Image 1 (tube, one colour):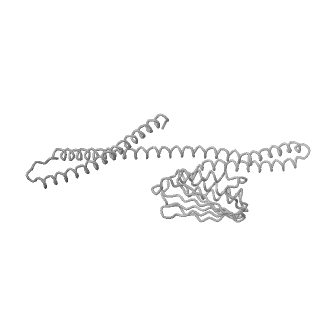
Image 2 (cartoon, rainbow, N blue to C red):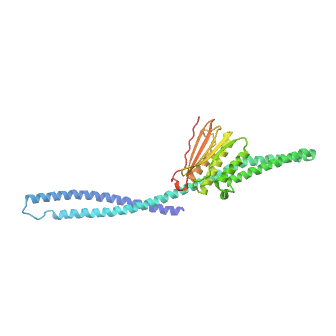
Image 3 (cartoon, helix red, strand yellow):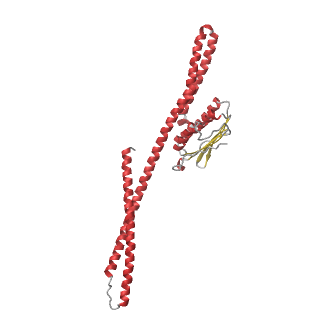
Length: 336
């Protein structure tokens, strides 16, 4: 929705609020007049009764006109307040509808902003990964090829060995690029789904990190969660495991995925060096990305890290029909 449309909706919303406030003030004013008139009526009727008691021969009601006038006024103000109350009720319904619409638009804008943040974070992550691995490996490969050119005439056998090394390193670079591409978008996700792609990812990290023991206990997802939310969850699991591999220095990483009552509970745990959350010297780039993703899919995000003992991340995601509006993430960090 563009700015002009938002402005029109705001104008209508505040016009309704103004009208309702005016009617509320009028109701209060009328109610005060009703109370004053009822007090006057009571006094007139008591005086009229006293006059009849002391002058029984005079049967004419001396205050008849005043009493009738007071009663008419009370009836008129009561009817007016009933009408005002009806209008206030209608206005309140419209105000609530507009407020819900405005809140929905604000939430949509918030999600759009979060998506832009994630896109920017992804770009930075990709740039960092390419610089730290692929670019440096390519630079090293160029150096090896230059070395081969020196050996090719003087020592053909050594040149051949160097070329074999170059070929092996080039294959490694290709594997790295394939992983970067896979992390951008698992090509099989739409066809194979969350369970198969998660299994493929786990097998890949096991093969590429033989020094780390990966312990997994993964249920096949039975909770009804949309493909998009599962894809974002898959990204969060990737990010958490990659963070553990790169930063934790742990020789054991555990992953559990369990179906609960209308929820899916994911736990990623390592036994590494841990960190102090909030310490400016620490790089929490990956955690920020996971928090943003959790916010988008209404997941509860919890992180608990203890120095020299490890880090545990829990992600709880509700079924699509059990999402609580405004529920998303929290984080916690302990230092031991």
